[in-house]
Length: 461
Ligand SMILES: C[S@@+](CC[C@H](N)C(=O)[O-])C[C@H]1O[C@@H](n2cnc3c(N)ncnc32)[C@H](O)[C@@H]1O
Image (cartoon, rainbow, N blue to C red; front, side):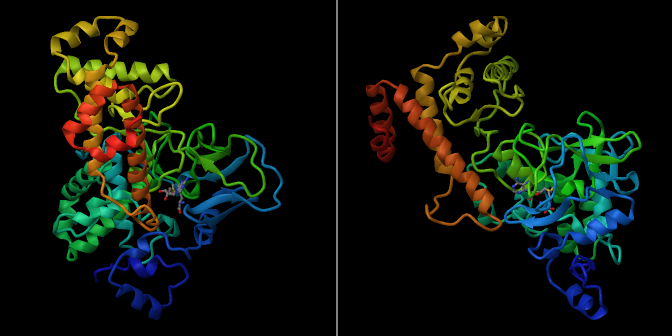
């Protein structure tokens, strides 16, 4: 009974007794995740019968590397901005309110703002799998197998394997994912204790958590409602709000719609923006990365300063820096490494953080009382921070496992490998940038002292 009844149930059109019996004996829960032959029409039918609306020119289809997607049919007339593309009535939505839940729940991951609502949805999803035939909506909720939580989920009774951890080394996601796994294990302990088959229950809980991370929406953004929205949840992600061609609309009658935010033409894919996320955030929550993502940056694996004035100073000055360059000022997550550009060096946030690490608490208090412009001048990096940054970047790069350059990045680990490659490229670019600033004698001294001859030869001007 390891696979519950779920495995058979999740294969559309296979409900005859003989076939189902065979599938129930299957030894894994892989049918909880998207298969290449999955057909979206079952859930579309179910949605229509339940009172849902789908624009007649839209169809759900599989796109390589993107799973299911909503696209305008070939030859369909232009759909003008403002058109309702999908409407899901309240009775088909799964809604959890943070304020209505009495339970105590801790956030499982950084940035999770509705932990009680997530816990309530997770429990409901796991329960739904126990039904003899879960409804087509539940059957359609397939999170990607490249989601980091899935990569490290492994066995309920042992630690994640070194091989699984290797896939995320050198990125801030490794620690976040391991922490998410252990917090989830703790949160579902009561269910696991009651379960006959602990591994199957653990896998169902991982599936439910993965569904919430990759398919649940928090609408409106500042409300306490977490929703699973059939059909609307088939829309894939556009990197920025400006690049999306559709958006959610929260209706007065409790239904949810997706509306065209600009004209959409024949065969175009309908995409919403899940949030302007960089590839680290996308991989952690959604299991994919976007090549040349315009929302760029990778979190530098640095601890935040551990004294109040230095922590506050870093927070404010990072926000200042971001505002000045037209980026989202939120600085909660700490300094990021970016692609160098004419407007801004890629290592500017790292250099700022290293400078603040090196000053006293008293000096930090003084700087906090100054205006923004004076602070910027006082916190300008010099040779000392450049050398510290080179040291830090060398250590960061050494964390990333060595990979054969031609190795194809496909399968479940492909997106993680692409993120590691992105980290390597950003580190290399930042090192070049810093090497170009450093006076030659200092540069030579650093590399001779650290015996990193390869880097020395590569960057020697
Ligand atoms: C809300 S669901 C969208 C529907 C999903 N494609 C499916 O098969 O059901 C989010 C998931 O879709 C995939 N996805 C969304 N946008 C993507 C994109 N721009 N590139 C690749 N995969 C994407 C990821 O697997 C993500 O976790």
